[in-house]
Amino acid sequence: MDAGNFLGLALPLGVGIAAAGSGMGIGQAVGNAVQAIARQPEAAGKIQVAMIIGCAMIEALTIYALLVVFLLMGKV
Image 1 (tube, rainbow, N blue to C red):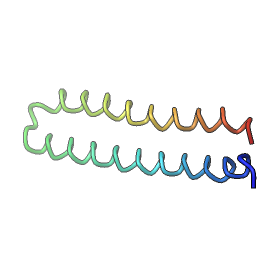
Image 2: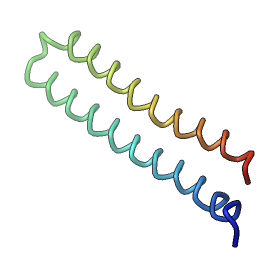
Image 3: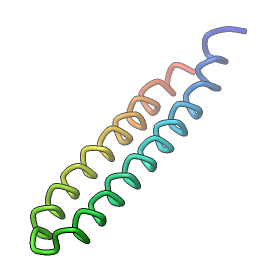
C-alpha cells in the first residue's frame, strides 16, 4: 500500500472525527448557555452573543478540517 491509499482512508475519517467533535462542542456550549440564561434571564443578551461567537469559532475549525481534506485529495 502506498501513501495515497492511506490518505484515501484517513481523510474521510478525519473529517468525521472533526465533525463529531464540533457537534459535541456546540452541544455543550449551547447547553451551558441555556443553563446560564435559566439562572440569570437578565443576562440573556450577553450570554447569547458569547455563545454565538464561540459556536462560530468551533464551526470554523471543522471548516478548516474540510478545507485540508479537499487540498489533500489532490494527492490521492
